[in-house]
Image (cartoon, rainbow, N blue to C red; front, side, top):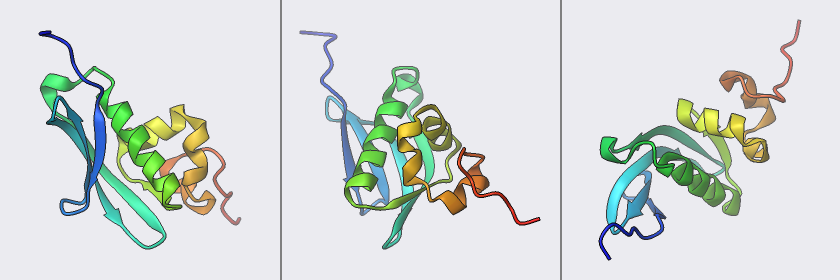
Length: 114
């Protein structure tokens, strides 16, 4: 049937250092990252303009955070959209190291020494 879309599919593309979101086999967005042995820095999220406003960005971030949790990686939310997502979804806050939360104005940050 025309107009029906399949569920978005998130996948890791390590050759491009990004998580990608596919709909009907086509890439609609991505999150660029830098991976380290103990953490992943989520740098930039991009949803193609014709696909904005459909919840794809949130779906992509949720998938990237789920992968980080599976791999026991700390998350450094350098991308403002990722940071805002974590702020709205406090169940993901534990992925961000407590000592790094202050850098991103996330709750639970360590108070600076006076």
